[in-house]
Length: 219
Ligand SMILES: [Fe+2]
Image (cartoon, rainbow, N blue to C red; front, side, top):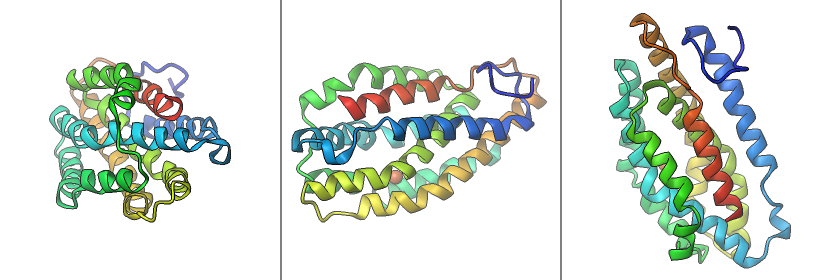
């Protein structure tokens, strides 16, 4: 099989490029489907920032930890550990909380409820500790976050917020994070191939996370 027309692959090192192409396309589609910032009301802008915060603040490090627990190769472990170290050391959840507060968009009960089902689906997927699929999902997530930052920054600006640390940091550092995580995907695929593991649906996490991001955008 030389393409990713089917999401169930026989794992192979040569699949890394089409995997990245597919996650890039998913990000393109997600960004193209976002409502235009100019047409959003104050409440709609607040809702997107609040739902984004409700999902990311408490879950990003948890899911990256799930990826750490899932992988088998030393290379992938070391890449994910560096990512976690930066998240914890620089307190990215605190950065995101300050961003939401400054935009008057602290998540409420209804924001948490709006994403509850899709968020639970991603959590359950992570709990299965799938080796390749979870790293593919986190590589996709980093890529999405980085490319979503200008939109998120624009929402905050229109909420009269001057707080830019979160969007500035993640618009830059996540480029390297994405590249590194695809290197981790490659290492895990190589390991799975060497140990003749059965094929897995490596896009399952991407599909679940895509649905969660769509929910963040529309409520
Ligand atoms: Fe972060």
